[in-house]
Image (tube, rainbow, N blue to C red; front, side):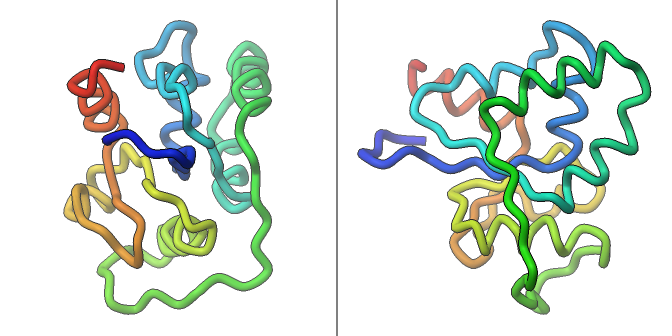
Length: 140
């Protein structure tokens, strides 16, 4: 990821939040240990997260994780018509763009997979495992 004076902003997709809260000690939860990053998501993403965590212990883990995640609310999202994504995923990408995130972190290989490694309107789309591997290669 390289060093930067400004903190890197990571926009977290629902599956990243769900995976981190699903069980204690999950590898994806290491994202919360990355120094010098700002973690954000959106109210749209949180709607999906809340529908997919059935157990109390998962909800409690999510609450702890969210202490360091800024949840943004967007009234109007930019139209992104030059990217092939299902309609339900467009607000995720648009939220990351509007938030001026450096990275959109998503484990959705089916929909975001073809975009992994690409940059859309200044936001690099990356899988959580790639993000963690890149940080290990940087020695963090």
